[in-house]
Structures are given as C-alpha cells and as structure tokens.
Length: 196
Image (tube, rainbow, N blue to C red; front, side, top):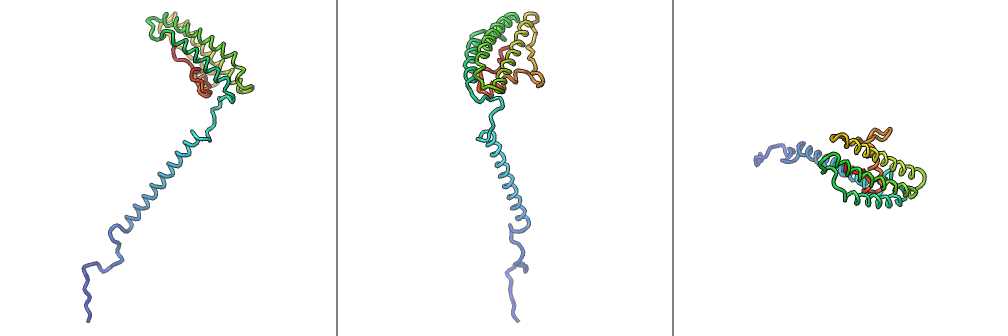
C-alpha cells in the first residue's frame, strides 16, 4: 500500500487563487466601461470644440462678405467714443438736470456719427447685406430716440429711467440687435453705449 502525503492544500486544485474569479472579472469589466465612457466624452467634446473654433465653424449670419463698411464704421464709432470719453460721466453728476445735459451732448455726438455712417452705407455689399446694414442704422436711430426721450424725462423727473424700444416682432430690446450686428462684423466701438 502506497501512502501519499499532502502539504495541507485543499484537495480541489481547480479553486481560484486570490485575485482571480468573479469579483476580479467584474472590476475589469467596470474599468473597461469607465475607460470607454471617458473616451466617448473626450471625443464628443473634441468634436464640439472643432465645430466651435475649427474650420467647420459657420460665420455669424449678420457678417458682411466685404468688410469695407465694417472697417470704416468701426473707425467712425471709435472717433465718436473718444469724443464722448472727454465728456463728464453722466451718472457722476449731482443733479438729474446735469445728467441730462451730459447725455444730450453725447446724443449729439451719436447723431453726427449716425449721419456719417449712413454716408458709408454704400460700402456694404448690395442686396440683403446692405439691407441689414440699413436696418442696423435704423435700429441705432431708434435707440438714439429712446435716449433723447430719456433726456427729456430726466429734466422733469429725477427718477426717470431709460426705456429701450423693443425690436418690432422680435420680442427683445433693440440694443441686442445693434450689438449682435456690431459684434458679428468686429465693430466693438459700434455697440450700444452704456453711458445712460
């Protein structure tokens, strides 16, 4: 008779060693799922950034094909802002009448600026783009009218507020449209002023 001695190991040698088995397989699967999810999110954001800043980006709808009007308008608007910067700050005035006087002087500068911009209007490409430039100038005139009514109101009521017109049929203030066109055409000096 032959006797076999064992070293104390269990008789079932097919049993998994520590670290192998269902628990480890589950953590590997979870790791793979996390890596795939992170890769998908990174890919998605890469695509979004490509569309936002890459060659696939569409120009703003109000961007003029020929920038001649925009360049000339930016120069004229910047000159008007320089002139207005030499005026006292309206909100720092002691009385409403003084504030109204400063704003009236600023409005005169803006009115002259708009007259000059209307002379440049033919620089905008003909057709729909020139029509949009004309509408932008008309929106500016509307806003200037709002400012002029505000000056008149300030002379009667120190608590008067600037009431900005709504763009007809659009449901938002006309200054939003002024700024949108100016920003689309890289005319930062031509956005609606905030001095009132």
